Image (tube, rainbow, N blue to C red; front, side, top):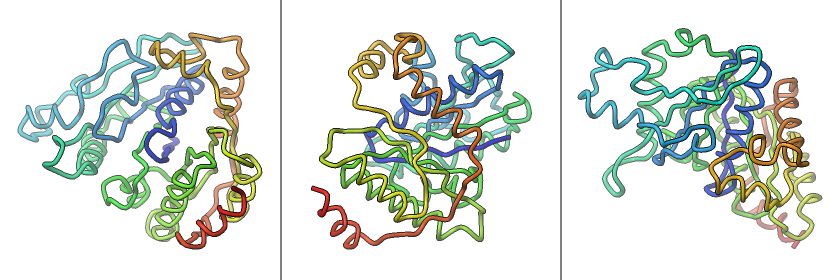
Length: 278
């Protein structure tokens, strides 16, 4: 079973990428579980007709008694149909009310619940896609890396400084826990934002931290319009270049064998380096 973690700063497009990857994998006949690891429950909205219940909400109702929880309480099957037996299952970690708890707590509880209930084996999952809020300073959000649940990490980024800073944070986490968890960086998935010299900047940055670019998604009104309708481009605009790009990224991830320990970069060095491009 492959377990893939997607990180990146808020608003960079992680959930859109995650949902398109899940769709691509299911097209190949795989059984996929997408886990939204955020206080919100919108990671899987392109794959479901409604927002699903969150794992943390279900745990609260059950007084955190795992024995009282059934898989169908926390797992929602997507109605999307695929040839060859492909299926997509969805789960959302959820989180505390604003101002009263740590957002990473939901991630910890969600992954421990999925593991404790043996969900992966029960559903015969082939690929797990963790869609994780980008700030790995919090221990909860770093759990998939720290505990080795996801040995394979990808970061969604752009040429914006804040996005590259999140890549640097994720790289530090992977480096810190390499001996403990075996986690490695699979590469960068680029969502272009029309930053000056953006593509060249990110190519140089990937080389600088010892990783690769898995795919480049151009700034696209089509993706935005499809997302606004609650659909993937595969359903909303199947004959567009964007659909081909997402499928190619999915293929490259499935075939990827170049997993590395990234070279961390400090904030001041990153900022000085970034300024030369803008």
